[in-house]
Image: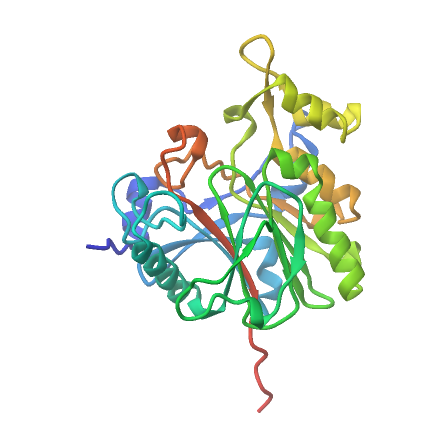
Length: 316
């Protein structure tokens, strides 16, 4: 039986329902100082916890953005319970029901989801109503890690379990985008490529944009080897690499800060630093609340990020 959560039950088990960087000390990284004005906060809708981002609150009248937890769904066992992964060993009807439940929680129709089969690449596409999944939730774009839309009621749905969600909004032209940025996508600059496509196709200006670097693995939890560091050093300057990586606990290992890397990418693409929110929520640190590949050695479900344009209300 699906467990319906209340705010009181959530706070009793997990404590705070709000996260912020809140770091203005001299030793804090630039993204920590710049993000201190924002918070990632929890809402409980229809018994389902939903993560929201204060960076996007000024535009709630025309767009929505949300991120799931592992709570409030119907999946069982290590997939308990809000699993969105089609290939994690779950019953497909459970996955579909989770998508429908979450749609009800955030006020959209599950028919309007746009799914992509993410492959840790940097291909970005602009999508419309014809790309939506439909009543059977079966239609999926292949080999795509970034989605953009200018259409209302087209809900971009991207999956995560430690990789970085990038949510990008152009409030001037009312364009929304979501990209999946693991370390390979970060090396490939998928954040910059998403912004460039918004500029080319819709006339967006990065100076008008706001971005969220969503819940994902933090630097202290993310140990990588020399080959990953070498790939990143081909893309980022030496001063940037000092923010992005530090020596690990063992020789030849490094602690990688994907949040810092994505922040640098978005900033170099022209987004004002004050308009970039880093959620500060680590999937690995909060494995009881969020799915994490690293924390469970791959035995986990998938989280999802959602971003969409709402239907414009008719004037009276």
